[in-house]
Image 1 (cartoon, rainbow, N blue to C red):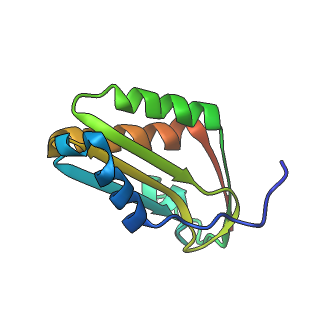
Image 2 (tube, rainbow, N blue to C red; image 1 turned 135 degrees about the vertical axis):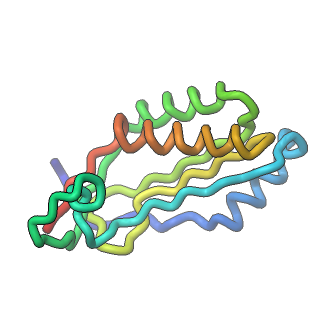
Length: 135
């Protein structure tokens, strides 16, 4: 795998929200939620499964499959009450504290937006990306 060391510049959430609110469908939306995933020092095995081998994360190799991400976005748009979906994914060798992803969901009511955010971030994390922690 060829790892890019030049990570992307993170997007502005202020700009994303301004753009989303300027769209025609904005009048149907009552809520926006943003997810910002970052590289953490604590290994995934410890956080998720309680396996502590004493190691710490120093960096992460991150990549994604654009087609799969696009398919996940399409499925999210089909969910009830969802009118806006935007995803940004970093790539390459990321350091602790670097942004991994941003996801913005806009929809009519809180339960629909929360469900869509949970669905899309879950799909991206389990089906679209490769994360290799370097300890």
